[in-house]
Every structure is written in structure tokens, then in C-alpha cells.
Length: 476
Image (cartoon, rainbow, N blue to C red):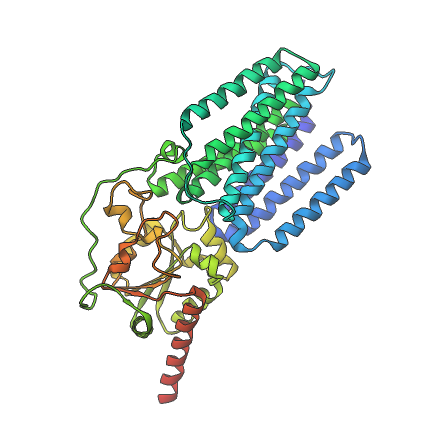
């Protein structure tokens, strides 16, 4: 018979966790939701400690203190640019923790597991170890410690199949032995799983990194859920399954945002798209002999464009994060609104290096959540917008995605900045974005190329608007 009191307490904590996660659906509710979910997890930890005796309290407290201190130090020092790499790193830590728990439970003497528990242990061990190595590789790529381009090995698919076969064979051996042979078989399975995670992640390029991060989030949760089955802990099962489900949904959302097949992304392949007619500059653009303006001439004209525009859409990208320009961008939006302009932000789902990266950066700069517009909502507005201001973005506004076949971004929906009457590009230089695909938007006559440090560029635009306002007020 189940212990109804224990079950009710567990279900209450699980319900609190789900209630917190439910608030993530809106940016404004995410802060409260985060606190609610954190409270649920703290209650779960306290409950586990209450129900289970701690064999060595001193060791437990020491480990908790060291781990908490290291985690706090890392969190305090991490910048907004480093958050994607930190998130990938945390997924890896979750994976290796699950693998370690599974290893301990499978090798514990005198505590036989039933068939479901044993299979769950093998799955938790393998998935956790593979998540660890894949996440470490993703973290290193995001931190620019490794090259971000895909690395495809000779016979890559055969290598993956061979590693999966080795893991299955070693787990089968482990199921029938005990003692040292069991330990060696499981150690071999962990090593093969680490190799599998590496081989799996190494051929995924930077343009697909948001999908990889979401997928590794799901696998870390799945590994934790299997460990929960092994140790018969409902709370761990529920938390792990929730993470796995949310990560899976987010992976599907990212693939849909990129119009990419999940299999194609994970195989590191390109996806061809129908070639459309070349993107034309809007009819409202002023005539120009050829190409976009650059340098001082472009800056002078950009200042005039912003002063004369009635509607402006700002498009942030990873370059904004690199330049630390989110506060200056927020000031630009504020100044434009003070001048009576209609201002909004266009957010592409895969802008940055992880899902929601731009939302987090702009929230840090206190940009009103209501001004952040998703791609499907904002795209119809570009054709009637006076100016689109691109800050550190390239791939997500690259018309090559809809007019050129067989590139890393072919077929990916983009923000239709090219449809705006004027386009101001506040990027570092003319080099392609993360995908390596040249951007034909830079050749449009309606485009003004304000190359250089985005923070300095946006600051100059803000100052020109402020000076123009002061001048008009003095004249009046």
C-alpha cells in the first residue's frame, strides 16, 4: 500500500515546480516563475535529506560548501556573453552527475536491482556520460576555445554506430557479471559513451548551436529521470522528466524557427531550399548609383534617417552581446520614443548562441517586455517601417537564406529587415555571420553600413538625437 501522506507531499512539490515553469510562458512572469521553481527544488532537496540518513555529515557539509562556493564564484564572474557556454557546461555537469549515480547504484554490493531498475541504470549511465562530453564540447565551441565549424570525421556514421554497439555490448556484459568485471564493463561503457557524445556534437556547427543546447538539455533531464527510477525517487523522476520534456519541446521550436530537419541538424548536414528571386531594395529607398553607403557619409545619413523616421524596428544579435551594447541600444530606443517615434525590437528565435539570449540581454538593460516582438509577429511590419536598425546581427537578417540554395542557413526564416525603407547596419565589419554565408543586404542601396564597435556606433547615434533635440528646443 502506498504511503498517502508521502505521496501527497511529493505531488505538492511537483505541482509547485510545474506552476513555476508555467509562468515562463511570458517574459514578465519568468522572474516569479524562476523563484517559484527554485523554491520547489529547495523543498525537494530538504525532503530528500529529511527522509534519508546522511552517513557522513561532515563530508556532506564540506562537499556542499565547496560546490556552493565554486558555483557562486562562477555565476558572479560570468558575463552575459558567457551565459550560453555556462548553460552548456551546466548540462554537462547534470549529465555526469546522473552517470555517477547510475554507476554507484549498479555496482553497489548486496542491493540487487530488478530488471527495470537495471536497464534504467544502464540508460542513465550511458546518456549521462554522452551528455557530459557533448556539452563540454558545445561549451568549448561557444567560449571560442574550439573552432565553431563542423568537424566531420571519415566514416563518421559508422563510428557512431560502432560506439552505440560497444555501449550495448558492454552493458549486456555488465548485466551478467559482478565485482571487478562489472566495474570494468561499466567503466568501458562510460568511456564509449563519452566518445559517442564527442563524435555526436563535433559535427554540429555554430549556426545550429541553439538546437544542440536544447537537445542536450533534454538528454540531461532524461538521464536524471532514469536515475530516479533506479533509486525509486518520485521527485527526481518528475524533475528529470520535466527537463527532458521542456528540452524536447524547445529543440522542436528551434528546428522550426530555422526550418531545419532535426535529423539534418544533428547529422551536421546542409539543407537545400528553393531558390527565390533576388531580394530587391524597397521602392521607397532613395536612388543610388550602386551598393550601400559606408563611413562618415553613411553615419551622417543614418542620423538624418533616425531623426526623420516615424517608426523604427531594432534588431539585436550576438554582436550586441560581444560589444556589451545592450544598454546603449536601450538608450537609443528610449531617445527615439522621447522624440515621438514608434519603436519595437524584433527577436529571432535563434539570435545569439542559445534560445532566449537576446531577451535576457535586453531584460538586463530594462527594455520593456512588451516591446519585444517575435519573428512571426514583427515580419509583416517591416514593409511599412521607416528604418530597421541592425545591431550585431547577420545570419538572422541574411536574405541569402531565402534566395540561395544549399548553404548552412538555406530555408531558414529570417527577419525581413530588407523590406524596411532604410536599413542601418551597426555591425563590426562586413564579414559573414556565424554561418559563414555572405549577406547580400550589405549591397542594398537602402542600406547604410555603420561598421565599427557597435557600442560606440549606437552611442554616437544617441548623442546625435540628443543634440538635435537640444538644438530644436533652443531655436524654439
